[in-house]
Length: 200
Image: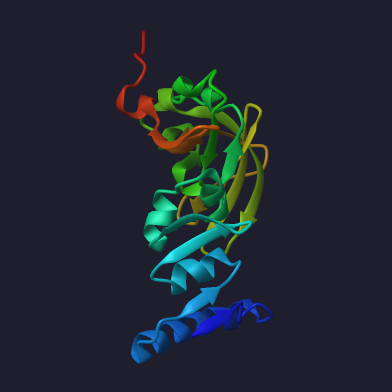
């Protein structure tokens, strides 16, 4: 069964219902299906296996989980899910080893925590930031925060205190997908495991 962007001109709520219906139908009938889409959410929700194609070239093939958690190329990392690209990855606290090698960092919103300082136990691993914008997403806030020269995007639960534009906050980047012209790799913030000593 070949489906070429079948839900492209349908309202978002109905598209969600149709994705669930299509997945159940394919499982019940047991027919091999190829689903072509530019919508990453559709691909992740419907597919058992995803093939990410860029300008006619296969970038990566794998399960939705593998492609999201272990992107094989910078294009896949930036195409699947929301993310921010940092040109100078070594300027982020805890990622200094990336300095000086032309390494960029792709950071997903779920890799970042933002809030007042009392919410963090390891302040030495955090950055100072200023809240620039808040976007209500229904189940959570999408927070734009300025950290030095970088504008980062992250999520914040509605269960936590509400931030305000202009508020000074602490920002913890847990991990980043680093890449350059030769390779790509995932790195954890080293200060989370090896905090800087506090001198009193």
